[in-house]
Image (cartoon, rainbow, N blue to C red; front, side, top):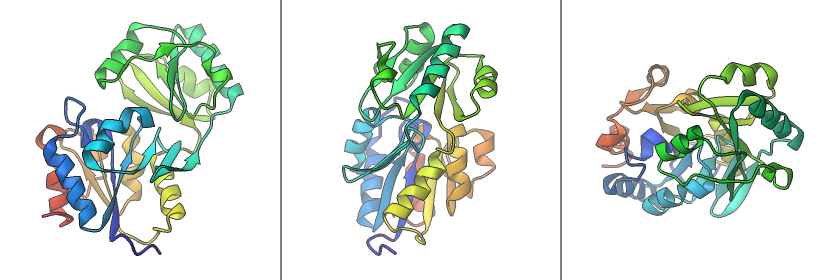
Amino acid sequence: MNTEYRGVVFFDLDGTLLNENSVVSPAVGQAVKQLRQNGYLPVINTGRSPLEIVAAREATGIDTFVSLNGSYIEHRHQSLYQGKIETEIVQRVVTLADKLGDQVAFYTTDQIKASAHSQDLADAYNLIHTPIPAVVPDFYLHHDILMLLLLTRTNDHFYHEQLPELTYYRNSPFSIDTVRKGNSKMHGIKTLMANLNLVGLPTYAFGDGPNDLPMLSYVDHPVVMANGIAEAKAQAEFITKSNREDGIVTGLQHFGLIK
């Protein structure tokens, strides 16, 4: 077992490590840096892409992350895992979306493009304060796609029924994170821990939403934000303050990981 660390702490971003303005507050940034100084490995575990977490990494000094809901993992600038969605499956998603009048955003390790523009597309990205992707309808034919974002408000059941080989996490009223079956934040944790020989160390996780449920169910010490959903709070060992109130700091202090 890796003896470099005393434990591993996983952080969701939206609604958790990030405040209501989708930024890391100075207090939270300092707390994470203190956590590392105290011998713990901080890890971002998010549905966002690597492109969308640069500012959070800079504010916290975190250089290990599980992104795209477990579909891409990186440690100290080295890729550890990529969970590609087969092009044929992406094609079926696009065909169904076109039929339903929905749109699809395509995610690689370093790019995000969309099949078409819509108000849902704009609303989904404005909600998390990130740029609206450019429209490149055939992007998926020429790149390895690790995650899809379905831009739809009400058509969830069509995708679930017709494309069961994918896993879906609704992340806003406008959109659904979509990954290859088996990929999740929990899968990302298992893969990271095995690759870095961390199995056996105590694990902690902070989250708030639907895609955090697998992660919270797996770690030793699940922490949920006061702004979290009821299903997440039901799994919590500790419910901390909200992301607006620097709940990360309170949670880390509760477990004695920082002072």
